[in-house]
Amino acid sequence: MAIRTAYGLLKDYPEQIVETVKIPAGATFKVGDVISTDGLVSGSNKVYVGKVVEDITADEVLLIIDQKFVELADGRRISGSNLLTDLSFTEGMVITAIRMDKHIKFEISQDALENTGVVAPAAGVYLVGVNDSQQLATIAALLGTETSALVIEAVTTIPTGGQMSLGYGSGVIARVILG
Image (cartoon, rainbow, N blue to C red; front, side, top):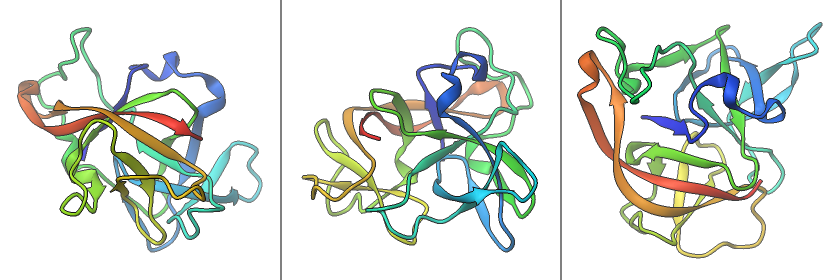
């Protein structure tokens, strides 16, 4: 899975949408997963405990990114960088997640999307979180109960990293419309 935002480097993100999240016991998350938080880690004022989204009508949704990459100005990753699809985060690791703030655009690989056989990714299709899932689902119309939602603006090819930055996959460009 791959997920990037139009902001690029972490220093370019608005501070209020960047969160530090600790992976809870027994969980494994990947870049591009949809998560929620279960409050701050005991004794911390800025690290949250991550969790799987339990109630999409109440939980605030965040998307996991990773800042361990060195990326060149033209978007390529240096030789030897992992494929984004190979990254997973396990219990106790601290990762970066982005709150879905209105109008932020994301590049999301199609393997991070659920339900694509029912509603194919296309411009105008919506992406929403799913209860007890770590993926976004494609839906044709919003139900009105979502706390977070994106709209697909384009289906495209996106870089997934890898040796000499030659890895590409199918993806979408999606903009947050509810967040």
